[in-house]
Length: 469
Image (cartoon, rainbow, N blue to C red; front, side):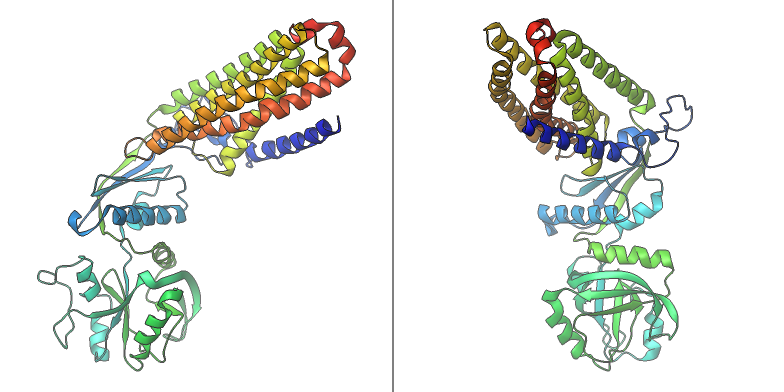
C-alpha cells in the first residue's frame, strides 16, 4: 500500500503540472466557434499550429548556381542554415525541406510579415574581410556602400568577373583579395554604444572569431597593420577602417545602420553564410487549407468520443472503469502538456494521431480488466486476481504498443521526404500517446484500482458485479 500511496503523490504532482502547462496564460481565453471573421484559436494558448490550421507563408527557393557545382549535402546544409535563421526570427515550427537538387521549400505557419521573412531567408550574408592595402582615403570613401568583386565571390560562383558591373581594385584592375570570410565567425551580436570610429553612439555588431580561425585571423590582420581592411557584406563595402594593431579573437562592424537593420544583420551572421545562393521562385500567402469548420468538427468529434469512452468504461467495467477513466484523464493531461513542452506543431493529422492514441490507452485497460475478470471467475481472491491481471496483461500491452511505435518511426522518416511532411505530425502525436499509455494504462490504473480495492474490499468481494464480472 505504501508503494501505491507514493505513486499517487507522483501522479497528482504530474497532473497538476500538466494542467498548469496547458491552461492558457492570457486572461479571458474562450473557445469561439461563432466567429465569422478569421479563425480564432486562442483556446490553444501558445500551442504551435500548422499551416493547414492557421495559414501562413509558403516560400519556394531556387538555387542560382549550376547544380553540378555543389552536392546534396551542401543543399541540405543550406536548408539547415535557412531553418536556423527562420527560428531565430521567432518563426518557430517552420517546415524547411529540400525538393530535388535545386529547390528548398519553406512553410511558415502564422507568419504575416512576408517581406521580412523573404529578406532574411534569401540573403547569403557572405561576410568578407578584404585586403584594401594601398587604397587612399578618397578611394575608400568612393567604394563605401558600393558593390565590389572579391576573390571569395568568384570562388563561390556569386559573381561573374567578365560581366559584373561591380568595382575592381583601382590599383590593379583585379578583384579584391579576400583574407577571411564569415565562416570563421564564432558569434555576432547587435549592440548600441560609443565606437572609436565616430566617437559617438551608434549601432554596431560585435563579433568573435571561431577558435579554429584565430591564428589565421591574427596573421591576416597582423600583416595589415597601418593599412585599411574592408568589411564587405554580400559584396557591398560596409566600411574600411585602418588596422591599428593585430587582431585575433574578434572586433566590431560599424556602418550607417538602423536598429532593425543591425538586428537582422547580426541574425544573418550568426546563422552562417548560405553555402548556396538562393532566389525566391515563389512566395504565396496561404489560408487555413482545411478551414475553421474542419477544426471545429475534429474537436467536437474528439470531445464526444472521449465522453463516450468514459461512459463505456464506467458502465461496462463499473469500479475498474472508474480507475480507467481517471487514468484516461491523466493520459490526456500528460499528452497536452508534452505537446507544449516539446513543442509539437498541431496539424489536423497530428490531432487525429492524438485522438487515436486515446483509443489505444483504453485498449490497454480493456486487456487488464478482462484478465482480472478471468482470474476472479477462476476462483482467485481479489488481491491475487488484481496482481495476475496486471502482470499477465502487461506483456501484451507492451508488445502491442512497441510494434505500433516502430510503425510510427517509419512514418516519421517517410514524412521527412518532400511533399510528405504532413505524415510526421500524425506519427509524432501517436507515438507520444503510445509511450504515455505504457505508464497510464498500467501504473496509473493500477494505483487507483488498488486504492479503491483497499477502501472497499468487502463490498467488492461480496458484490462481484461491481468488478464487471
